[in-house]
Image (cartoon, rainbow, N blue to C red; front, side, top):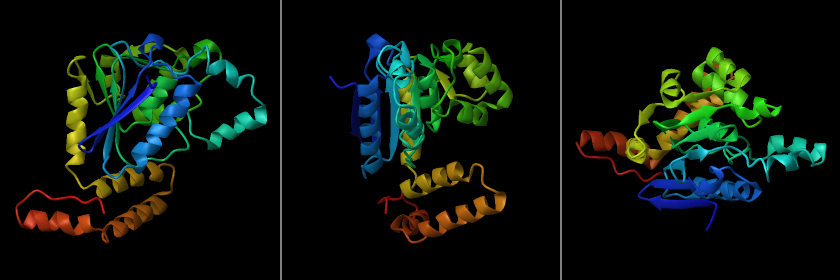
Length: 263
């Protein structure tokens, strides 16, 4: 059985971490697998949006496997280790692997350490009532290294991020909703339907416009306002040469649903 599963239904890709016996923590093998899965999703013309979750009802992802993944880091050559800054990060999408297609995290339990970072790297997070989020690294003597200290304050604000990062305390789904870490909290049974509702809403839109909007927002972070506005307009101008750009207004005028081609 693969540690990471990938399936496409309609225009939605379903990705699952399948290590419930290990709280869906990732070891080196699963790390390599999930990078391949993300690359498959990125390059699949029929997959317009992805939903990622963990198998079972206890954990989305508890981070790196402390028995097989983390100890190796302290044994590697420091020069080689520093090159990881230019390689795909934990969970594949946290660093070094740009995917402009939307990604939804269906958080079905613990999202700790690297598991939280993986959720943060997704565009929309939906949580079940039993979800728990935490920055556990400081309790082990280090801190996040795959976007946690960067993305968390952008999403929940600096004050909330500092509280989570410096204390290492866990927060539940209700608090995550209050601070904006997740968009919605559901029952465990309602989690996937909720994620699929977001996926369907996204897939109903022009896929190229959706991807361009995401790229514009993400790549504008940290840019000077003038540069960001120019970049946004360049991306929009590129869309005007696509078939979908012509189809959208035409479908509106003809009072029918658009037939997106993704080109």
